[in-house]
Length: 306
Image 1: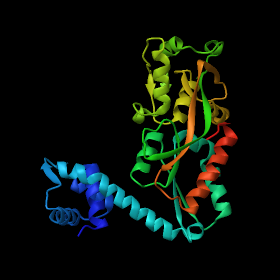
Image 2: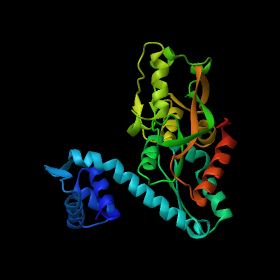
Image 3: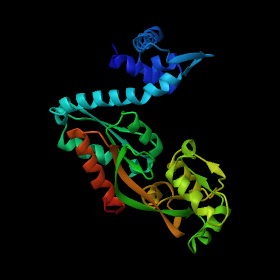
Image 4: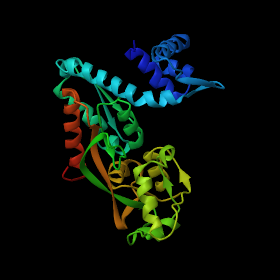
């Protein structure tokens, strides 16, 4: 008979392609995880993995099983959440996804808003980049999230709530006399954040499309992880950057008081949305955090109709 425990071991091993890594992820001993997968294979009458060096490779049967296992685990998690929701606002935990820029605007204040209303709740704000947060949603590790669009997943319910202009920032006033064109941006000496997610980050993708209008490619002089470091490097005159307008408003007075900004031509915007799995039933705690997050982000950006 299949068990949720076996399916959880299977999906984790499938994602990590290693029994050892999967056991570490789940907090099990490696022989225990291997035994659970053997029992699952015995129930199904087929092998799910083959050995490959120090890892494992999913078989064709594993590829077929994966979506069914994920749906089963998600349904079980939702069943637990539905029962727990009776007391969730008093003693539960809310895991809400939030991308890097949004945390600058509202991370601490969002938590404070929640705890002011329900002091017994435990709050986890998860994520750095929207693509990372979206993946956590797909895996069922988050109930809901606020991300920067686009998100390529038909299984998600997406509600746009705000947008924010991307602006060119520099410590050199001579570079801020007129809006920056695609050609001008392609020739600029740039520092950009989110280097780990550079191929998936929504802002990077938008900037790449922007310079492609001039038949150019986006080039960077410096790559960093966090936007705070990027703004500080701009303040030192080592490079220019493109950030959300609110980022400069939030960080400028503290990290870069002499840095200014100018729009791009044509203007570019990041679109911000709240997202959850389409088939999910949000707990009262998740609904509360989602509503407060929307209220906060619309107070500091440009609201849009969902």
